Image 1 (tube, rainbow, N blue to C red):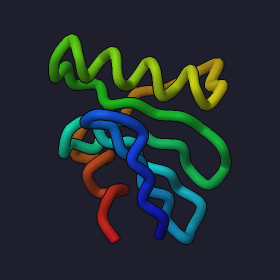
Image 2 (cartoon, rainbow, N blue to C red; image 1 turned 60 degrees about the horizontal axis):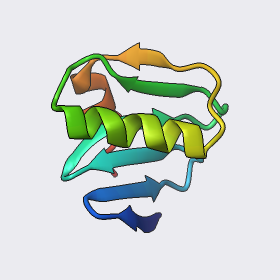
Image 3 (cartoon, rainbow, N blue to C red; image 1 turned 180 degrees about the vertical axis):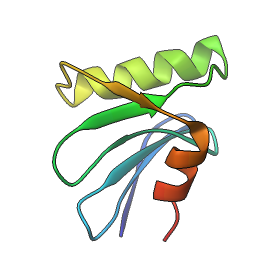
Image 4 (cartoon, rainbow, N blue to C red; image 1 turned 60 degrees about the vertical axis):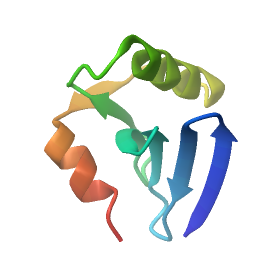
Length: 79
């Protein structure tokens, strides 16, 4: 597992299975799975968190992103 601080209140964790989970503040809100597919939460947290998600997706070159329930993202963010 690798933890990377990307900026103020923005962090990503890369797991050994190839999944990378993006956190805004302390909440997992988006991920890239081991197959390279991108997902973001279907929940709305705040304008700032939405901006963080969009910045992260853009920085990774994600052209397309599906949504997942927050519970699904939470489950993928645990070790």
